[in-house]
Image (cartoon, rainbow, N blue to C red; front, side):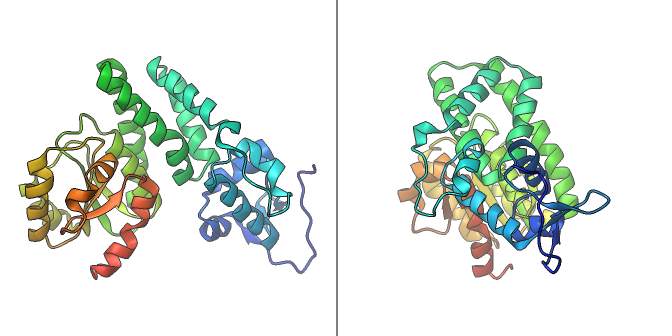
Length: 306
């Protein structure tokens, strides 16, 4: 397959930043799909800048459709030119399982250089929602189940410190680059570490929100002051644990009633406590983190903030 695409002279062409805006796929990922897998073939200007036609954009949208159906990027090329009726490969036919196993092994080996490489590779090859759904969230669930049965503080704390550093850098620059609403994001009291809240922070930042991150639980009685002083548009709480009954059924709804901005809950706690909070003032956003963050914008509109 040729790496050079040609189009009729009158075909509208778009620079990579516009294609990224139109499709939601960042420019790093678009370049990786081209260089590593040959999935797209933009034209080049004499100075080497990429230009994309409408059929390139349509192809990117088809790539996203396959990725969102759980197909690994390594298998997408064989599916792109197939009829629309072709079914996605069975889940066990993909390489997600091997990618998860590789990531788990690297985390448990405390191999930080390799972990950094896998982290950046996953964020380069996939839209963040796919990387979190198919790779990072399943790996965190697996690790937390193992640690519940057999704690390993060295692995946990090293992994947490790694993600805290990587996500912190990303948030710092993203917060400077956007004027989006500020989300005050905090872990819940029983969560032993910041893994879930860090994943939420990544996803929220990707969707254009500014994020004030507290990776340890902020006391509910301090929320009103935090919202006021930080000019936050909403509070988002996350946990991988069930959290205690009094906190969920009494303290949290009481805090939500008194607060002037919405409070949302996401992560495993949202699945485990759905029935307890379903009809109250706390907004249950679910345990699927990309979907949870996608629900923020309608919620902010309903609240009159956007």
